[in-house]
Amino acid sequence: MNSYIENTYWISIAHLPKWHTERINRLIIEIIHENKLSWVDFFELEKNGWRELFAFTAKELTDLEDAKNDLPRIAFIAEQLQNEGFQIIPINSPDYPTVLKENLKIKSSPPILYIKGRRGLLQEDPVAIVGSRNAGQAALNFTDQVAKRLARELKVVVSGFAKGVDKQALDSTIEAHGKSIIVLPQGILTFNSGFKKYYEPIVNGNVLVLSTFFPKAGWDVGFAMARNAYIYGLAKEIYVAETDNKGGTWEGAMDGLQKQRKIYVREPEPKEVNSNLKLIEFGAIPVNNEGVLIDFKTTPAKNLFEEQLEKNELNESGTKYKNAPENVEEEIIELLKKENYTTREIILALKLDWDSRKLTSFLKKNPNIKVIAGKQTKYGLTNTVNLKLF
Image 1 (cartoon, rainbow, N blue to C red):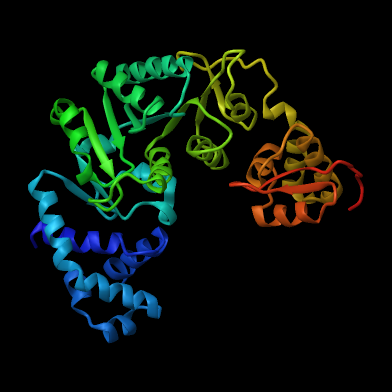
Image 2 (tube, rainbow, N blue to C red):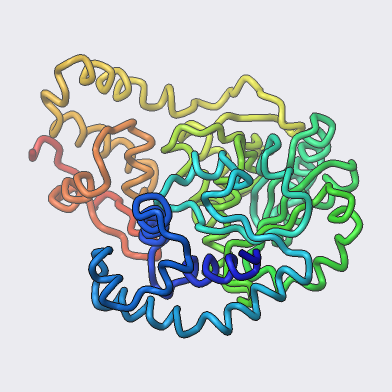
């Protein structure tokens, strides 16, 4: 089958409207691996055939019929991609990066990747450098030094294409004749100016441009947030130059810490205003301005919450949360005396083996603790704290 025809089907399935990534990936498994169907076979089925073979909802059947009717339009896009030298890598391809599947699993691994550049870069040793769009000079200097060191070590620097740390990571890597992957927050067909600017390193095999979004989709703030997960997912190690206590860099780092990934964070200078120290307290690994491990002098989470960690270790040996309500309440109150936290931050800081739902229920029932509404729900202390109510 002509590759652009095959790609037509992949594009159509990968961007089914309002389907979660996991649902799409499970459909791909059902079609290709469980039912041993080709895409042609699948799309030649009528609604009754789909209904017999797959447990589709009424909405899903409608979406698939719409996708089937839209195949001619998608075919033009697939042909354009092929003619202009873009490649499509589906999730079942041997060229699909293993590290991305390992980090994001079936739940979040993008069904297809759109790339331009040497695809072999996807199989090399990837390291992400991330940070604020409005990073200070210290963070940019750190990014420059780390990117150039990684280039000397023949590692691939993964970054987004935002101003600040992302752009510095890319430019420093290219300056050092290193290798880089640009992860776009937009469709790959809308990156024309970028392809012109980075034409030489792309042609030379040192830069690969990657997108997971519909090829003609323009930049979108939602895409920018989603793109951050793919940057973290493509990397074996992550260096954080600078972060606030919210936003894509913070969320990605916190998620990585929960999954016990290697997150290196620059130790901030004394007068800097950022949340780098907080990430270190939550378990990130402190590094100096060259990205080298340091003996951290400020009390990290390991010491701040040593008693709770010891309790959890005892719990694992068979006495799990014998006096949990009282002990956990005291630990949470002590933590919230410092500032307000989300449930995920509390779980990470106290090394709790509770899930977010259980902790949320516990917090809302506690009269010492109040809910603080916002983009992220946080929890803080009420004016009067009376322990041992539970």
